[in-house]
Picture 1 (cartoon, rainbow, N blue to C red):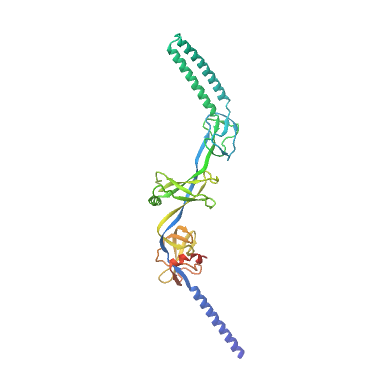
Picture 2 (picture 1 turned 180 degrees about the vertical axis):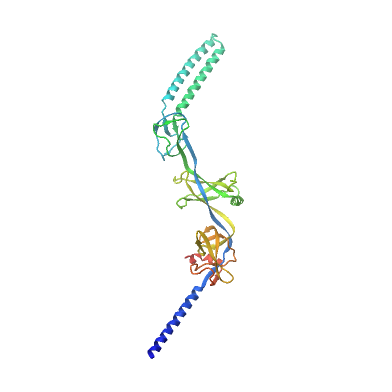
Length: 359
């Protein structure tokens, strides 16, 4: 009998202990940290899809017909202004130039003889004029054939990088055929489109000759080493998109950037009365962002938000007001429409301690 009473007592004690433990655990879980969004002026970094172009990117085309006799460079090679790149077979043009030179020499001899006879009044002055005109015509023909001969040599018009060849050695090239492209990558022009509202804000805040600096996020999600400068804006808006093109110039001393690359321009934009919340107060469902709102009945309700911009530990958002109470911690411990107990922390304090709150 005594043993039975002892066992019952132990069971009762364990039961009470377990209940107390569960109550204590429930009480600890029931107190969640809640805060409000904060409204303040801030600067956010906006990203724009960008197209990267060389400051000079041209097509090198044949100006004369003939067979490609020599190639002096290779694809991707750096070349200097005036450097000989390609040679089109010049034999025909050399022969034409020799013929033109002979005709010019004959015309000059004829002119000198006519000039001597004219001085002795043997021929009329009109014959001298005709001989002079014939000489001038012959010299012009010689100059023209020399130009055609020079066109068989294709030289670099500026320092740059040779692109892919569109012809091969021995190819028969017609006048105007594309041979390759040449790019000057010493500086790069980066184009990106800005919505009309942001363009108006930009022009209102840009004074005088101040040129805002921007950065370039490359395709590998790394920031380009050198900042760029916004130098020009196109003259017209695109009526279909409502955007206008900006152009930023970036130095490219290491030659990392190439014509035709893509990336994202990052430009700092001032925002007035931005609604800011901690990033950790958000969660994602099917690529949409949500927060948990605590309503008047202390009930948890999920609410979709729109991310305007991302800052360190913060999101600038649309869809919330400064009176909303948002759940800061324990997002995985609550359920929709669940009633909770919470502690409301001032947003200024929360913002100043986000490093400590970060999970």
